[in-house]
Length: 149
Image (cartoon, rainbow, N blue to C red):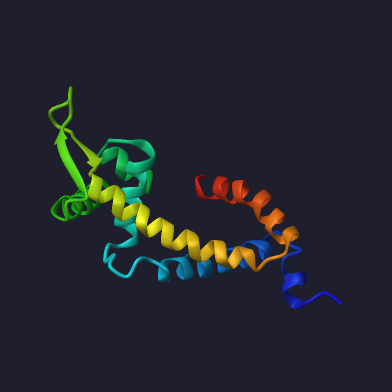
């Protein structure tokens, strides 16, 4: 006999609700696994991640990637500059813009934090069956597509 969760996920609305709750719980759990010395906000860590993935970016490009307003991103970048995690420089061709790049300390902070959370998740994944891990391998690109749309 199907459980109430199995019945709920048979509809798109039920699946949406179940996925939302599960993803939010996983996000919260991963956030709790952050490096204990890391006092940066998740938003600031996301900026470091964007710079690591994309290389140097303008404040406007960072704001668009992180889906925040440019003034909010300017404040985040200012805090990261003060911590020595990023540097700003004038744009090569547009004097009105500033380009932001990751420092070695910023990259080290990001990578240490990622290693810690990846290790926690790898331990949890090892507790799953091979079939469950295969299902997650197939679901990961779909979840990525949902998160970036």
